[in-house]
Structures are given as structure tokens and as C-alpha cells.
Amino acid sequence: MLTPLLSVIIPVHNTAPWLRTCLDSVCRQTYQHLDIICVDDGSTDGSLDILREYEKNDPRIRVLSQPNRGQGAARNAALQICQGEFITGLDADDYLLPETYETCLTAMENDVDIVCFGIRCVAAPGDEALIANIDYTQPYEGKQPVSTELITRTGVNFVNKIWRRSLVARGSGQFCEGLRYEDNYFYFTTIPYARHITYLPHKFYQRLMRSNSTMGSTFSAKTTQGMEHLMVTERILDFYVARGWHHSHRELFCHIILNSLRFIFNSTPDNWANEASTIAAYVIRKHNLDTIFPKEKLLRQLIEKHYSPAPQHKNPLPAITPGKRSIKLLSIPLWSERRDSHSIKRKLLGITIYSLRQSAFDYRIKTPFLKETDRYKQYRFFGIPLMKRKKLRYSPF
Image 1: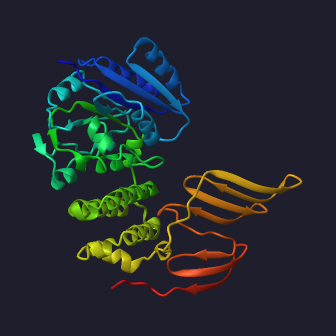
Image 2: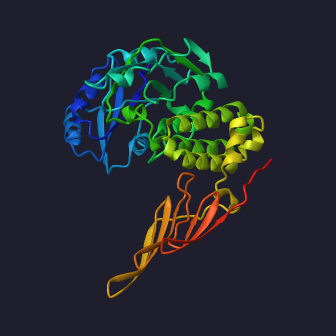
Image 3: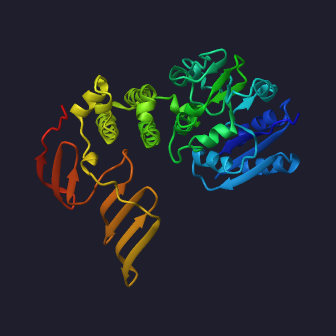
């Protein structure tokens, strides 16, 4: 019987002090048939040198290097070249117990698509408070058929699971790039295709909690970064609607949006509450969630209280392609236009006259002559307010 190959994806960004411990924990696994893909994401602290050293000494290790694009982009790059029948991940400042992969793959039966194991949080010196209220207790034991309840109760973490590669290929097979909570998108666009999940009680994964890490900042004080959670949720909803899952997976669809709304309001600073509500209202109206789920009071309250101007545009947001154009006179820029996959900005004599980010989070039309919100229009002259006109309050009920 052939031993299945397991691909291990490790994104790396400035984690040199912990990287050797991480890599050693993988290389010294009792299960040896591994395809180890390390993606250096623009590190500046010597992490890439450590990776090259390990790559030289262990033929199972492959190292990719890219400019800093975030953890989601690093994982996506690795997914493109992974060769294993099964896939898993590891953060570069964490480590595993030696028998992790052997135990998990032994539990991987023919109709099991995911094996999930426990997480133990280890605090960096001085950061003990970060782990005080974190609980990664497994919600189930043994082999379980996938259901809506199971999906909603299982943690979204990518790294404490072994995923069947054919399952990942059926889902989106992608992480969100440029945003936190990229695990959410991969999880919710993949797990509905799974047949069974096996839960192991062992806390194999050792997670280092430190205040300056991605996980540490996620569990720190309220921050505007929490609003990125709703941006990721918007993309999940797009994925579901495109497949008709807002009807066939109605309960799960509702859970995803309500959970995200509760998260954003619990994690967003008070002085950003209005902005958070406007973003939420846009996402709700985009897919008519208040109509699909008319009994959900939270959706209705948000629509009645805040109405983003974005949904008034019946046509899709303008298609944006990469590129930059400019008109110059004697090397002095008179007109310039910069475009990328997410935004467009136009300037006249160096003054921004039009700026648009193609997302719910930053859908704004900004000029020196007009400021528009969900409640009013303010006409200006190079930023000086001249006249304000209130809008009529909108309510779909």
C-alpha cells in the first residue's frame, strides 16, 4: 500500500526567532512522506536565509519567495504547486507535536474529507493575558457527517485540520488576499462539499500567542481591523449566491452574515460604529438579505438605521483593470489616472478629484467639491463647506 503524500503549507513573514522551532517540528514528524512548501512573504529579518538553509538540508522542503502580500496570498501561492493527496498548514511561529500527522492520516477513512485536531495556546513572555479567555475545545468526537450545525460549531482555522485535496479542488480553493480572517473564506467555501469530518481530542497544534502577531492583534482591544471580517463575509456571500446556496444552504447562509455582524459590532471602536453600520447596511442590501430573512431583527434594524448610497447604483461597480495613465506638460503632471484590481484614482494638477475602492468597506466618491454620506450631501469649494442638503430617510418597510 502506497503511503499518501501530505503537503504542508507554511507562510513566513518576519518570524526568524521562532522559525527553526516550527520547521523542526515538521521535519521531525513520525510521518515522513511530506511535501513542505514554505512561502517567504517579503521578510526583512533573515527568515528567508533560514528557509534556504533548511531547503538545502531537506529535499522535502520547497521555498517560494514573494513581495509582502499577506498570509492569504502566500497560502494561495503554495496551493498552486502542492502535490499531496492531503493538505494542511502551519503558521511560522507555531509548532506541532511529533505524532500529529501520523495520527491524523491513520484516522483518514475513505469517506472522511477532513481530520480536525485540537489547539493548545502558548503565551509569549509578557503576553499571558492573550490566552485567558481562548477556548479551542473540540465540539465533537470521532467521525461525524457534515451538517449545518457541524459547520457552524467547528472552528474556521485552516492549520488544525488535514484536508483532502480533492475536497479543496471542489470548493473555492482560495484564501482572501489583502485581508485578515482569510481562513473564513477558505473554510466556508470548502466545508459544505465535505462528507464526513473526524475529530481527534489531542491538542497537537501549539499556537504561540504574542501581541504583535496576526492572532495576537485579533484578540487584542477593539480595532477597525474587525471591519475586514465583514468584507470577507461579503465575498463568502457572493460565492454562495452564485451557486444558489442562499436557498439550498439557507440556515448556514443566515448564520454567516449574522455571526459577522455581531463580530464587527463587538470588535469595532465606538467612534467607528457609524461606519461599521453603513458597511453592514450595504452588504445586507446587496443581496436583499432583509427580504430573504425578514424575521431577523438585526438585519431590519440596520437597514432602517443606515442606508449606504452604494446600493442605489443599479449597474455593477465599474470594471477596473491594472494600469496608470498621465498627461504631462514640461514634466508637470496635469492629469493622472491610476488603476489596480481594487481601486481607481484620478488627479487634476495633483489634486484628487475622484477616488473609488471597489468594495463595501471603502465605497466612496470623494472630490474637493462634494462630500456624500448616507444622510446628507455637502457641497464644497476645495474642501470648504458651502451648503449641506439632508437626504430623506430610506426604509424598505
